[in-house]
Length: 75
Image (cartoon, rainbow, N blue to C red; front, top):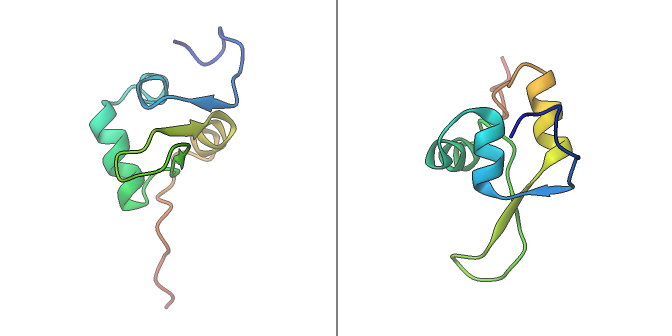
């Protein structure tokens, strides 16, 4: 999947999002858990519930240069 050649969808699966970012599924999941990447939304209940990433949120994050989303300590 390439960013410019597919119709935009509101939600993306973990494999779709990882492919768009050119990283592994586990890397994306880890980054999201650490706060380095946008968090997915959970669409089914439970510990192992189904999650999706918001395409617009990922594209915004990419356009911003993939900044670390963790809170920066105040000085």
